[in-house]
Image 1 (cartoon, rainbow, N blue to C red):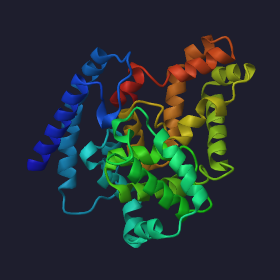
Image 2: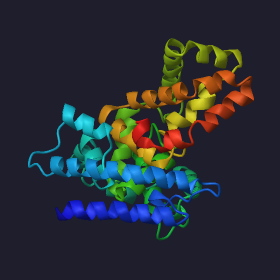
Image 3: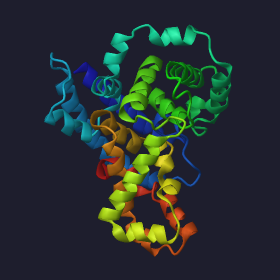
Image 4: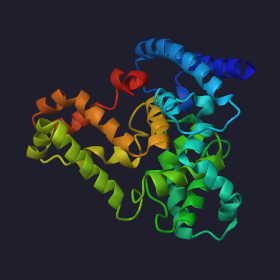
Length: 317
């Protein structure tokens, strides 16, 4: 009961801070034109949902047996994992906890090993560019920049085939903000790159390009008019969706919506990315069809990742 009350109080404190300041959940600064009224309305309704979900999760996690996949757990995950339990559930469902247990000293050993100067320099350039609108990434001493650098450097030296790829900084950065655990972030990143999204972050990015082609084919089958319209106007799916896939919607969709996507990603795998992409296109297909040319179509894709439809993560997911 104490844990439940503490978690509920933390959720309420977060809501209070977000409603009364220029900084939102997880430290992201609101833009100047942010619609506070609509967001507060959403949060008021969503807080009720969170409280109900939290009670169910607390009951589930109090059971003496370990977390195991089941239809009940799948349903719970799809409805959202409470922030206070995300690290634990992500680690278990993704297999990251098992990897960490099998390689308990590997992360520290990687950081203590001789580092390649070219990798270090590339990562040093990218770390300050990560979430410039987030207060926890504004400086490199008491924020998230140092642990982010450590995670990216360790991962780059563990997997020489991948090394470092742009986009990993945003993924690792959001993992850090969510888990508040440097080593857990490293192992979750490892699972994503090696197991859930193989060949996404290699030099040829063959896995990423293949999945974008798969998305194109899915749209052709389900929304043929949209597919034909993009083709007629020479808009490739790689142009409008590469960032969606390579950043796993981080730095694309609102933060809580991204985390709800990641809840399912760590549980069900990469098929979740296709579901989200298809939902975005389906909800905006008329606007796409009404756009007369290349510039207008790409503008629709840019606009579709903001607004009330994607902010209301519970309805969207």
